[in-house]
Image (tube, rainbow, N blue to C red; front, top):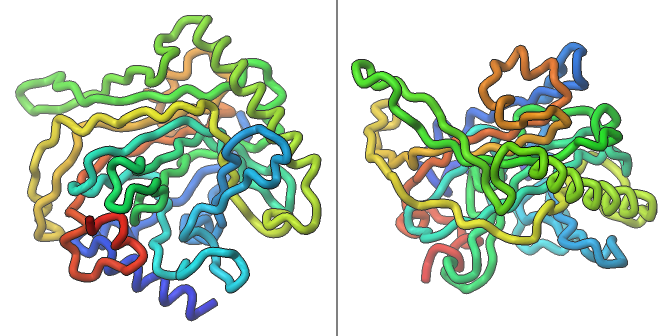
Length: 328
């Protein structure tokens, strides 16, 4: 275990060294149940969870479970070659966009924290990938470095919300708007992503219908879980897509700023990304609540900044595992 920890730390240091300081400050997550006291899990602990995707609902479901490379403690029998060379991709605050990557795509997911084969917590989720046409080797990449897979900063207990027929996932893009030209303070204007944009009742009905199918898939998968499954023991995060369609993130409105603490130039893409899993009537309004009020709601929230970082292909310490992606 000590060897694994040291190797993973070395990989994290060298992958995107210019942004090391911020990357090593891993955020904790808050767990709520709606009305009760919040609990916390340390980010360092969550980084040890293997992450999986349940790609589709076609039987047998167990064969559709795919491991996200670089997550969890690697072993000789997990089928992942050179797993220790990959960075831990999780982040609860930032999604990093390497400036030599032309396109990043997303889709909403229901993320479930599985504890010894039982669903314990629900997370609003967003699956992130570099599509084949944007990668150096023409393959899809999910783990493309540090802060390349994002997690909700507030989780909710499974039993407190999944029985509610209005439970759903909605996701949004947030753009900064100048509201005071004197001090250049900015507010965030959120707009829905996907085909079902808007705040009307029809949108909630559509999202709830999609979520019902996802919950059915999860229930069937867990009901047929046996002791030979890789997620039958320990802590795992399983992501189930709410929609199959991938959405292109906008690669525009880039401002160049100077970060004096790190003595390097940093490009910040001037928008945010959010995903809300809730039964409340207006998911968008939840994005404006302060943390204390949000903790009283049985809601899971994922909210991150989209940050442009240095080109991966120009790093002299780029691990061999990432060379097919960045070196064309």
